[in-house]
Length: 72
Image 1 (cartoon, rainbow, N blue to C red):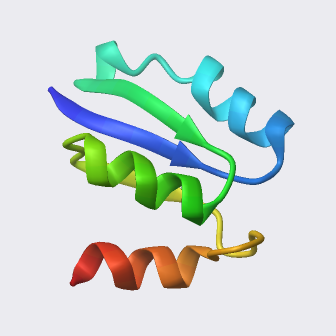
Image 2 (image 1 turned 30 degrees about the vertical axis):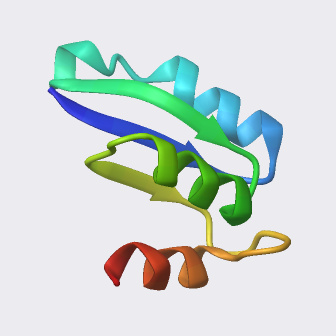
């Protein structure tokens, strides 16, 4: 199974994505969700993750900065 986190500053969007996708049926395990890129970086430093679904416009660290962090 691929391990997934969802990163979005809008709580309703984040919850909708997390709750309305049947992750296990698709071969994924939802291992976390974060409210911004900064908390996602903290999560990624402590956990092994295969897929990151992220918003672009977020406070502190946006999705593009998060992607650059993951890529390095």
